[in-house]
View 1 (tube, one colour):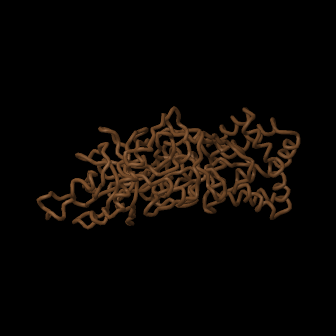
View 2 (spheres, helix red, strand yellow; view 1 turned 30 degrees about the vertical axis):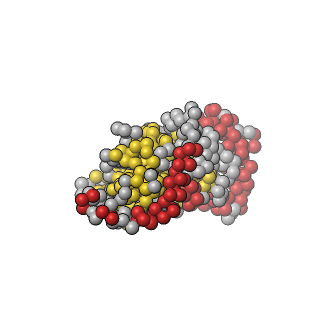
View 3 (cartoon, one colour; view 1 turned 30 degrees about the horizontal axis):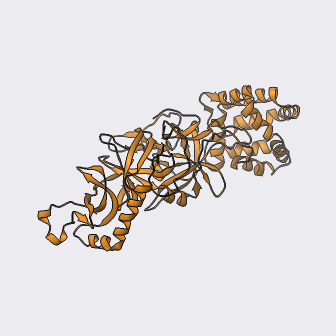
Length: 484
């Protein structure tokens, strides 16, 4: 059964009240003390089970080095105290398997390659997909990760996120770095928002599931976390109704260290800074977590993992830790959902496709209506969309053909081209050429589609084939098809 944190929360509140009664000001007046919080007393760098009043310094000094009136007392009103030294260096915090449907706790990357000029090594930054949420502004399904994961190496809103990695490409020293992926294979989401503040390192990406014209993109998801196995299950149970408290047991699953159990040392860690690409970012009031004795709670690559309580409710978003990995730091989830405008709902959910038009379908309609032939094609798209959705989702032979034709990746490529006009459509994806993909889907839809769909496919077969196989960009494809 999930642990009851009622007594623990009450004791945390009692100590917070003690700090608010004037103790905080007294302690902050002592030499070197720059932050106070309620937390677990530490011995030799390990958190114990004893709640205390914590004071934080940048450099610990012995009692002999301080005047008597500048020494932190061992107790305050009978409550133990602790003096903790804040590390000088922090860093943002690698399973490489492909996961379909998508779940939390798996690898995620924007696939952008960077070149280290010192050793001429090419690298890609990788983090963790935390969980899934709903964007309140439009009701779309989004995945949650860190800002620094989604925007690594110059990533920006509109870029694709990949799971596990983009299709391999040859790299040359003379290439233009940072280097974005050319292929859309394994693209599972599109970055729509990324925030970094003193409280939040978070990003959301719209999951590639809403494909009306072509149906299931092949990246359904379940709001579970890989191998979580807490309270008898893996499914996320929403967000916790109140913030975590010192001493509370928490869990996470990440790309680098899989599932780990830890304990909250304090829910109010002092300010610290991280420098990334020449810019310094300062964070404050974060959750400090330490793994069990001999266990590292997180390592580089676990960034983006959600931290959950013993009832599988999300309490934090893991993002950083000191260079020695002695502990981990997480944003409070209330700060994250507020900054990104999302809600995290409880229960497992599997999404395949929807009949709601997405941006690419809407772009099709706009461009097609510029010509008389295009207006007719737009009408046919509207008429047949629901049928095609149904066939791809529910007619096994059509579903198989769609995936063998690399349909999800082709659709993702077209969608990327609709957002980035300079993006060139690939000649093939996974060894499937455009001509082969078109022929396979045309044949299977003509075989299993209704009478009207079959007739319209026959009438438009050659113009659509020429547009799909010959266009260099999405815009050119739409204009060619719409002007047929």
